[in-house]
Amino acid sequence: MWKNKNFRVVTRILLISILFITTGYVLYQELFKEEKTIAAEVGNISPDFTLSDLDGKEHTLADNQGKGVVINFWATYCPPCEKEMPYLENAYQTYKDQGIEILAVNAAEPTILVNQYVSRKKLTFPILLDRNGQVLENYQVQNLPTTFFINAKGEVVKKVLGELSEEKLEEGLQLIK
Image (cartoon, rainbow, N blue to C red):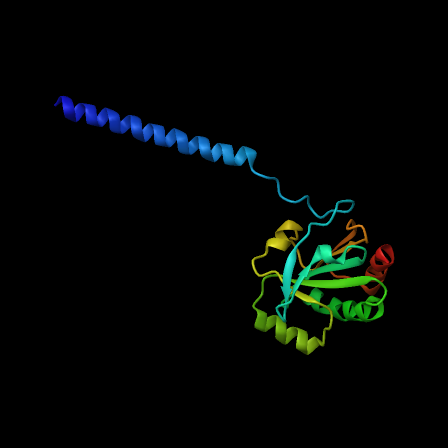
């Protein structure tokens, strides 16, 4: 009986110790984990990212240092996104040799759908695939389309929620030119 009672006491102490150690570890991880990138808001430095395009070529935002950049978050199922694509294509053709880059980040859709869409629309600017939605999360994009205008220093100077008109696009482009 003494051995059985001792065994139960030791087992309980061991289980309680494991519980405390595990709880302590989780609390430590939560309290001291690294902070995520600062949100992409006007006045902040734009969070860096690397995404692949439809051809598998990687594009890193930081590689565009010294250029103005338009980042447009979109999806094939989004009617306002579809309406603004011709404006983005025209802007790309006009400004690509003037130090402005347009990057269209697709919201985690299958590559085949995006490829068909891009072919049908005859888009020539870089279409990037955010397969796991991490870039959308870092930029805190909740609605599509959302467009960010980033100056040559990497600062967000304008954010447009919803559909871009030609006028809004041109205003943003003038800010980052």
